[in-house]
Length: 504
Image (cartoon, rainbow, N blue to C red; front, side, top):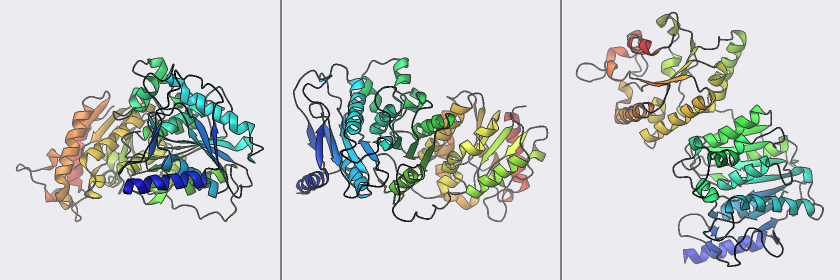
């Protein structure tokens, strides 16, 4: 019964909101080997409705606004699905309806999906379909009341890869902007997760290093690439958040406008609404469109969003840097309060160029958020990271494995941008007030230590065991009254353990 109702709901949404279905091609479809039609719509009891085996009916489904926005924008939506399926309902029709309700002319692109023995060479067909869709929208812009200078792309997951490929393509019509939600951007090995299917689905089993580069939009960004709004969850295990960061960094390098919105939680495939965070990101995207001239708001703009955590701390660091610029090639301390409270750290390590940028209470996602502000600009020869303890203490749902993955993400950002910098992880310390999480602390330390052994220019500095007594119990005298932060005696142990790892 649930399946029947879902199918009925899907049919109602499609028929009620899609005013036009427009085939991309007339006559023979280029790139197809046969005219066999195996297309199917899947509406599972659990999971997301999708369409598979798209070959004979690549098309645009148009959602025309009742009251077009004064700026006359249009958006072509590329659903995700790893190039083997299209999550066309929540990652297509629902988004188009939302945009049309806001006065934006929206089109859902039903592009061809991979099938065995169906196409001459599949790898370029999705981009061909997108370029054909852009051609159609340009040609009928007057009919649909569209300003051709305000035609953008919106892509989810693999559809984000397709949209970014379209934005960086040197052929076809130009796009004005892109909105990319948890996009697969890079096909380079360092940013392809073990669970990702998009690369092998699009390129097949036999692809070269040259192919990886060519199909990695972050490596194809040029001065003519349009601005982009990106949204991603830091805990996405399918398309790593580093994909959006890499694209944002490439835009920034070319001085192209961009906005990067990173959620600490949300996973992959949340479409317009991030359930883990309890909010939709679309209002922020619409605000971005307005601020960049692609959309004219007809209602008063909402108050600015609350500043992210530790924003004022970062501003204070930047002010300090402007007044007293630290010399490059220093040793950077970054992380949470155990570093923040080490006010006299330079006295502990005379002769070493220490830069302390710890900010108390931070978790690894905070350090990731501000990496481009208070890590990379210093160009340090060594980065010492103390963070992860607050992550584990924030709730039972945060596991050691999640902390390890967060550290790997931070490590990847530093390594990609500072390939010669030594990255040193100071192990999570024991804390009497957090006795209940010590099993997670030990496991996180163990996994990070094992992983660091596989990485060049990386160190694991164990302060956990040296802070225990002969019976492997925590020593109360090493902590101040809160039983969390350390006394000078505790920092003296850190000095003894850390000094041999510091680079002169």
